[in-house]
Amino acid sequence: MTHHIIVKFIDTVSNKEELINQINDLFSHAAEIPGIQQVQTFSSCIDRANRHDLMIKMVFEPDILNVWDSSEIHKKWKDDFGKYLAAKTIFDCN
Picture 1 (spheres, rainbow, N blue to C red):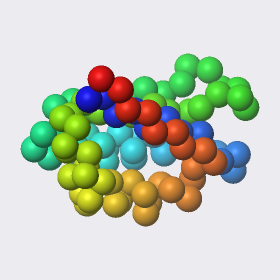
Picture 2 (picture 1 turned 120 degrees about the vertical axis):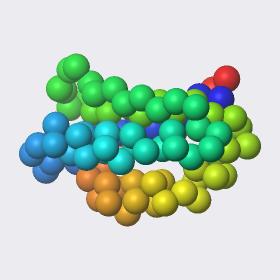
Picture 3 (picture 1 turned 180 degrees about the horizontal axis):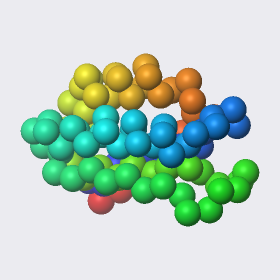
């Protein structure tokens, strides 16, 4: 299963690159969780109001979704970065 997290930062975020670097650092450890096979982050190459800023792509077995949701990395993601998000979309596919 491929799990996508697509986010738009709030307008008051002045240094998107630094924030994205911190998110990259956090998610770089996600592949250490058994069952998570791959993690990639993609920054938008277009800075427009109608574009999202970051996409996180994770590949794992469907039964790992609950493991991911209860992981410390996921909790830290929500606790530390949730306040910077204007929008978040989750999309899962095979």
